Image (tube, rainbow, N blue to C red):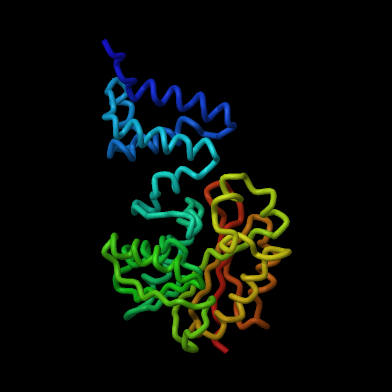
Length: 288
């Protein structure tokens, strides 16, 4: 009599042992993400299926995905999606994985856009998966959302996310704010590359070996792209409009110096993320 196929519980236990042996952090959580993806349920609901026996196809897919996790590939790439502000965002190595810290940028941008009259224009620079642009288009439907990226393949991914979410975003293949008219935006937001080149080498394997280097490496001091963005944003943002940039936790003082009257900005605030680290720089475009 053939042996009974292993249950989800046994597959998860075996998977956990393999991932722990490979030095993978948060093995249980990542395996539940995979199982939930295959079962079409949430992480907690996976527990209800521990005694169920997966179909051979599901078991095979689980084994393939487990192998990818074992090689330190991010679980978001393995399952091809992640959650961002309640939205299902497709993700793959064409773009940086959306992270919870960036949700603070969206909330701050949403609050500002709701304070504007008419049809405010917001530009998401270096849109990646399009998570910021899509979230703003969902949450502030009266706004016109423009998203730029220097990589055409990345823009294809962002467009796919906008279509899947049913939102309208104007995508532009451009380096930062090139081709945007002067004084045309109420708000510019960005999660730019801000990791120093030296620090990129020391990032965990799951980031260093899989996520796009161009979305991470901000040059020797991590400020190469941010400095350019501040200069270009001064041209594009309307007087009284705002610039919001996600930054590294050790960059608050340096970015505050960049957002100065000489650069046509008035510094507003540095906001912290959920861990208490400086994460978001906000400045207002000077009126003179």
